[in-house]
Image 1 (tube, helix red, strand yellow):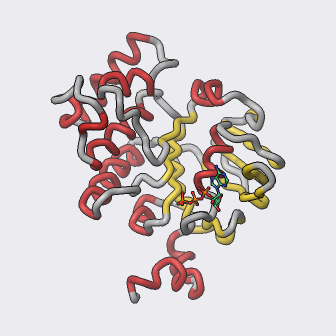
Image 2: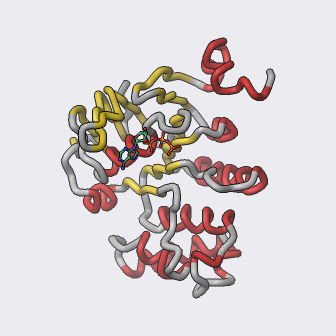
Length: 238
Ligand code: ATP
């Protein structure tokens, strides 16, 4: 289970004495889009935080673009091309422009200026309200800003924690459409979700259950497994 861009293996981590991850792992290749599917409380957020260095791994290793980054500081990981969008995604007390500047804080000025213009082209609703507070945006626009903020860093891999959180189905499909465009352009994605609609974006799926990876394979293989199909698509009745 190795990926030429990101490989995490045997990850154990938790909070105080409470262990949440029990040997979890994931692999992402260049230009690949991977969905980490799991129910509430399975440990998805904890796992992504370990990948970014926001929490220490008790055991296991994280490799990114050929290097062991298990103990590397978060800002150094970001500089190397790992970007993270948390469930909240933006600083609500800051403006759109300021959020983008924070997302691109490690990027050289002229590059960031050009990239910001490009992002405003992709997200015109943000361009119209550059000095508006992120907290004043609708849920859907806020999510778009979260994506733009993470992309301002110019990542090789965009790691996202539940981009569907708090969004109505209409906005969920808009987010999927936008991410699909970045995927087409070759950006590698790792998306932690419980919403199976995001499987539309997946080249490969990992399931996380109670801190362990249960399944790794294609979306077709997930559908073909009766028990997994029932567990994740049961409500669709198909
Ligand atoms: P969700 O979709 O609800 O965010 P998740 O799959 O991302 O779920 P985590 O947020 O990683 O799951 O939580 C995994 C487990 O760790 C849960 O049992 C949760 O209660 C516990 N947990 C999360 N944060 C903390 C914390 N700060 N202190 C103690 N336990 C925590």
